[in-house]
Amino acid sequence: MISLLIVDDHPVVRDGLRGMFGADPRFEVLGEAGDGEEAITAGVRLRPDVILMDLRMPRTDGVTAITELAKRGVTSRILVLTTYDTDSDVLPAIQAGATGYLLKDAPREELFRAVEAAAQGQAMLSPAVAARLMGQLRQPASGPLSQRELEVLELIAQGSTNREAAKRLFISEATVKTHLLHVYAKLGVNDRAAAVATAFSQGYLTPRG
Image (cartoon, rainbow, N blue to C red):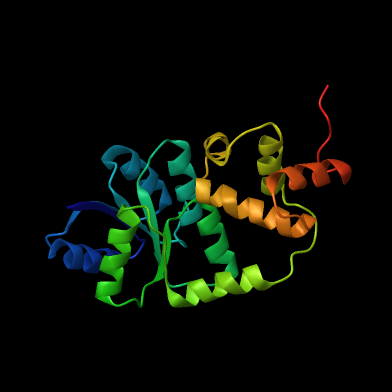
């Protein structure tokens, strides 16, 4: 049985999700939260297998909650369930460590499959979100490295593995890999060693000591 925490600022949505999952013997709803702040408290206390997380909520938003839960060592898989599929919503949520991203118009069985996949650590994206991410990856990379990309690259230059970098930065290992792919594209390289060497030559990294 997969345990769940439902996070949404609309009581009607929470009631609907609780009724839907509660009626299926594969799932157990441990609790609900009405915003990101409540989600952090409940996540730390309940430690569910999967957290269904809305994004745009009062007080504390979903992305902030995802980030904070990771910092506090909560290993629950987080499946975003929201109405929004814009770049400004999708990318930060994935980068913060969300395992999957679905829209609220997803059919019941698709949502069930997504929760089961998330519980096993498998990514599950709605078709619209997957298409948006693929479009982002197909765009030619340009511009300077972001602060987070630099932080990842600095740790890699120090000899950290992806897993070690993820632990240091309180993000998922998959997110580290995504940042590295962006770094490779921006620097025009194909591997870690070339990325570090190019970053030194272009002044992104400086020798210590």
